[in-house]
Length: 316
Image (cartoon, rainbow, N blue to C red; front, side):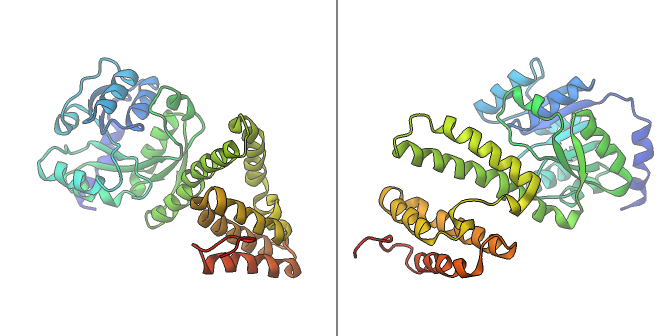
């Protein structure tokens, strides 16, 4: 870090307590974070958004805040939230820095889970103060998101001298700061995607299968079950594993795969992969008896060898 930037934290402490806030990328995240900062006394002054949906979100969550171009957002705001897709972020930062849009002493915050503060290096060289604040939350693009930020964990990465400023912003949004090292950001993000994004896929798939089985209200049936399973998993980890895989019921698992091949063949690969992972974890933690694991793993291995073949009990 160059000498001119190393002095910036002192300048930041001399700022007025309240900041003007801008948002570049009015997706589901940016307007919600800006609205939460507004509740803390900061003042949103500008938003940029391209699609009609992003403009509607900005209008709903940040009424009377003008929609302007990204460079104008940076010109108006002390604190700028860069809430764009991960793959867009590096190019956006480089472009803003190269065109002179970044101002010395400006707080530049991105909300990508994948990247740490290093992706903001072009802006850092222009004198900006780089912060990576990733809310570990799924967003709807509505006012409910602001409420959900209360108690939400944020993955925080920033230069050490800006750590207190980064954590203070998270606390002002109602969140809980969790420090993530720069080199750990990709693993951190993969963990969240594995748990949250794939959970949505699994639940949606489960509801579809229940509907095919004749259940009139799959969501009502799954709600208590999934709520209990999630609570048990968060409390007990692998000790919460239950079901035919953890018990070593190879025949039941084979029957499941046979039904899926008949009624939902697109679900077979996911079922087999998750069953294999569950079996490995249950075996490693002593929940699945070794003598039962052999038959179970044999069923799964057979399905892995012939992903497009007939299910158990079917003829070729």
